[in-house]
Length: 263
Image 1: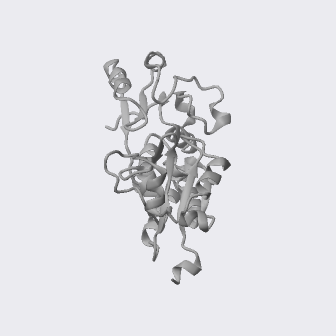
Image 2: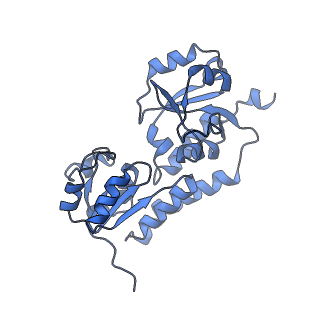
Image 3: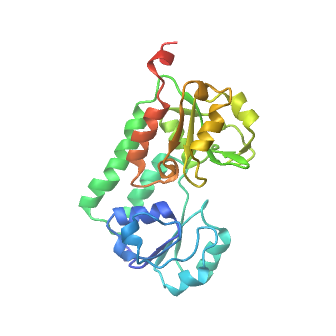
């Protein structure tokens, strides 16, 4: 006999919080983090349990959830171990590819989503991934995507964001910096990497026009062609119902212009 789906869920992962509501399971969400901001209206009255890294474990335990959703990268082992020691069921997720993100959305749907919702939310995500996988670009644009500055930190390999860049036709210029998953980089190294496109997300660090202006002064192919773009950070790093929109928005930014494709 399959266990009954959870009726009380605490989500410690912003993208999974959004996914639960998109799947029609928002009524079961009894606690979220301070960083869970979508869907804003629906989350207005939901209890908060602190941040993703500084979660108030006692507050989570007091909510008596049937299930806690966590993530290997976003939440701390200490918090997960404390919740499990208190007898709570904790599902630690860790999608590192866009396909895994879409498949996780399908697994979340197994918690009680209707067939109609699966068709409207899960199937488009899986189809968008399959379509992108089936149509790799003839030429990949060299792309730099930082997540922080002071110090500068770049998207590295073995991350969801890296796979999104690759799936959308990019060649991540810091994919081979193996010392850490989000390598520290100097601007000299960015110049040496010769990115043709730079994507500046608005989270976790909020890059803005001043950062575009600074990078535009460097001797970079992306600066010369005006291909330094401010982007919605959730499209780069949130797995779940945003996947189709992420592919639709990011892929054109990485597409080679007709002139360069002919060179």
